Image (tube, rainbow, N blue to C red; front, top):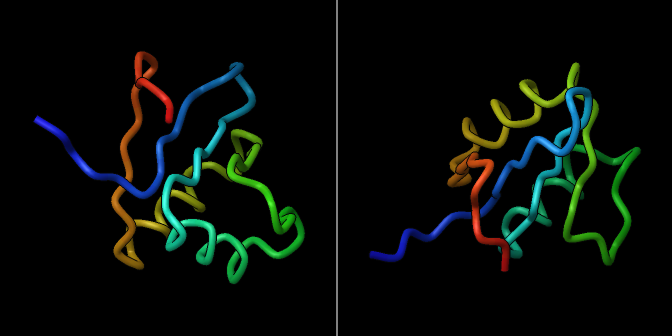
Length: 75
């Protein structure tokens, strides 16, 4: 079974999360909503723990499909 997602969230360290932006929709969302930390070619957004929940919540509210798994297979 294949599940399509826009973003995969991996906890890299206790204080750092990596948001893997799998689809163009996810990259567009970051460009619009996370302006200070976005670079054009970035497919991975590094986020401090204190901001992770708010970013994930905003993505979900805007309809992005998100998964989080420490054993996720990355593209």
